[in-house]
Image (cartoon, rainbow, N blue to C red; front, side, top):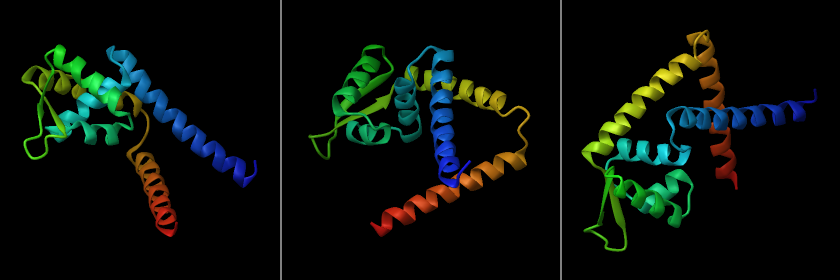
Length: 145
């Protein structure tokens, strides 16, 4: 296999694996990957603007608004106008949403544990080192443009 083909295969496998794992977990718990990402982002960041959610999830404004409104109707999220800038809407988990996000986080930890069964800590570290190097190279390439 040529170097170029090997690199293509590496990035294809990386992207495919990442997508498959996210979708498999979401399917296992019965929630879309996008809904799961939004819930977890709110759990980690606390009260967050729709704009920040849009950037973090790579979704358009209408998608974020639709998801947040659906969560609001389900009693998982509350929204309010940003008091510092009324052009922005802030979203935060309700206590019910926080409990659900905590349960999902716990389920995700168990899922990750099962996925890494038989993969040594040393091998995990090698993969993390490779990914860190690829991210560094990407940052360097962006700075040169």
